[in-house]
Length: 196
Image (cartoon, rainbow, N blue to C red; front, top):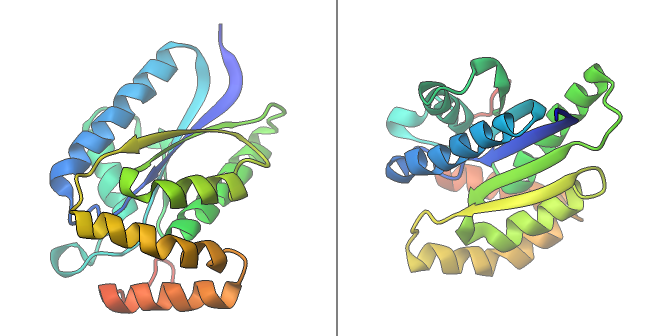
């Protein structure tokens, strides 16, 4: 049976330039599920790869989204099924950009059923991802989660736990969000966003 519901995979790009040794495994797990869902009747499946120009050095000229798209195409995912969100620097921007893409596609296809969303993400950011997904997607879509262990150092995992309460408040206070984004861009040496 073919399901009229559109399925969206949202793939968060956390440090795609720095964790290449795990990115391949991360995207392989997503590609396997893509094939499985396609086989089991979803008529339309889109993959939204997210992440802006967050790298430095050799990777400064390519977005995380573009890096991941290239890997997925190599793995046999049709290029037309992969959509890119390249402006984001922080997680909440990943989700807002993905939401815009989903809403635009849903409007174009005049979809009447509720789209389903599966989010692939770094397990060290679990609290943040689940919180923002519920705030941004749950009012509109059915949401499921696929954490992946990037085997990040303990210090980075602890940092995520410490920073989460601040980022949680930034969702409600745009000025705080702007400051956090500026700090992250400065620390990472990010000079621009896509389209600017």
